[in-house]
Amino acid sequence: MAKLTASEERLTESYILLEMARKVLEIDLARMDQTPLKLKDPYIRLLEITLHRLSRKLYSTKLEMKRLGLKIQLNEYDATFSEYTIFFRGYVLTAKYLNAHLKNQVSRQIEDLFTYGKKEVQ
Image 1 (cartoon, rainbow, N blue to C red):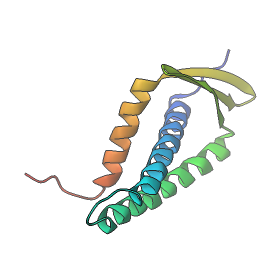
Image 2 (cartoon, rainbow, N blue to C red):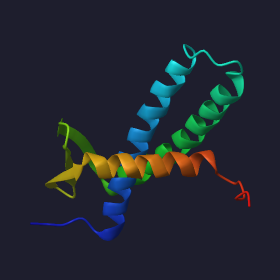
Image 3 (cartoon, rainbow, N blue to C red):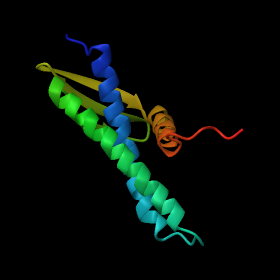
């Protein structure tokens, strides 16, 4: 059975995390309009900028995946695991990810996008 190369594996994981982060931010943006905050605009603008930045990263990831002939499909998910099918070089691979691990990684991804280009406050 063929295996993904290290770069293909990083690319597939990056795609999965970016897709999940995009979904989370889109849901948060939709809910932000219904939240009783005094100053919504800065938060909405931050989410919109972050979504735009994330969309650019996702676009370049998809282009690279297309160049390599990689396709990813979400099969099943439950409270514990998410199962993906990865199509590559004529082979099919099934990968299971622990949802708690995906949640932590998506959280870090979003945090990195929020702080993009910012120096840490000391």
